[in-house]
Length: 84
Image: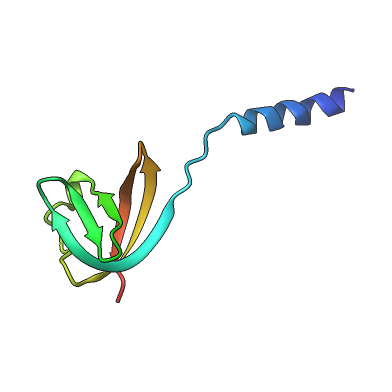
């Protein structure tokens, strides 16, 4: 019985840990709005940008790969890479 309890407790603890899954999107930048801190791809997907990415080297017409998480109904970008 003791051998069974340890793995059960470990599995229960693992199940209670929240996992953050990030998604990835690739596309051409349609707009970068520094006032609203957003980046919009030509397919219409809008991403909230972190403050340190506003005014960065991302510009309309560039192809990018965006890693993001969905939080509160918004796509929050965690990484933006030029996709050459």
